[in-house]
Image (cartoon, rainbow, N blue to C red; front, top):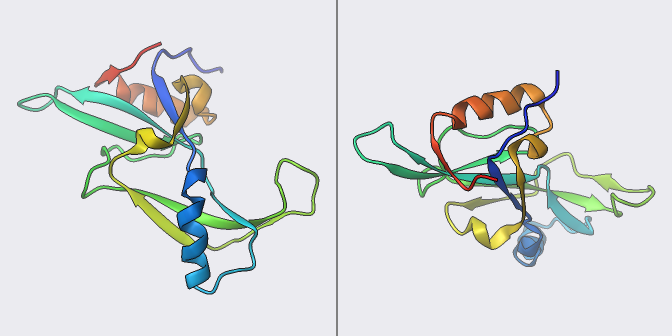
Length: 149
């Protein structure tokens, strides 16, 4: 079975600009054996308006390319937490390269994700896990999605 084409726009995020904050935090913790750091997942978000309550409410839902994400929009009390892992070597090139198995540091975001947006795509192209794609498709069908292709 293949995924249905989707017109839901996902804003893909790239947190690499955060390295200027991550590297000093890792050094403060005494972690210096890694050349660079990266989030283990690729994130994206979708903006919606939820009409299920007494008045419409804006929400920004964050998910990964695996289709993992919270059914609660991010906010000051429900932040997106990004775990950073160490990396030696360049993954896109030939080995040797290695990754840390433990989280080095975590960063949290409740707003400003648009500052990390680097491209847009559709839900069906973003989520590779078919079962999770259909769960998100069903969930988002109950909301007014802002940004349709």
